[in-house]
Amino acid sequence: MLHFIYFVGNTQKYCKRGEMENRFKEQQLELFSDRTSTHTFAGNQLRLWFSSLAYVLMNALRQKCLTKTELQNATVGTIRTKLLKLGALITVSALRILIAITSSCPYKHIFAAAYKRLKMLPNTA
Image (cartoon, one colour):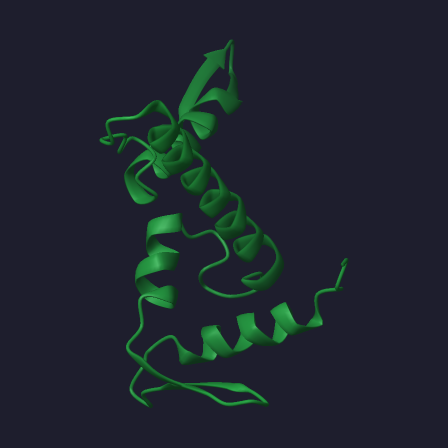
């Protein structure tokens, strides 16, 4: 990760540009926004929209649901790997959707906490 720190006299200043560059790199590497390999402009534009929407959703998940967990400052790639790329059994019925995660999942407590916080968010529809 890039962090630009410069010194003015004896004072250390933090440059926000470095953090902005980190977010750009995170979207390119972890959400594949640089993958524009279709033959049409519209197809590539759609891929970029999906990548941007995924970043907004992941950032909202981090800010709203992962606070006070060990993933509150995690990168998008870490959240994807540790929280979203799980092996689970999903059962869909008329009344509910059941997600059964293995008992040996090391991040099941974070998954459960994020789910509780997600349920508590206000419905703005």
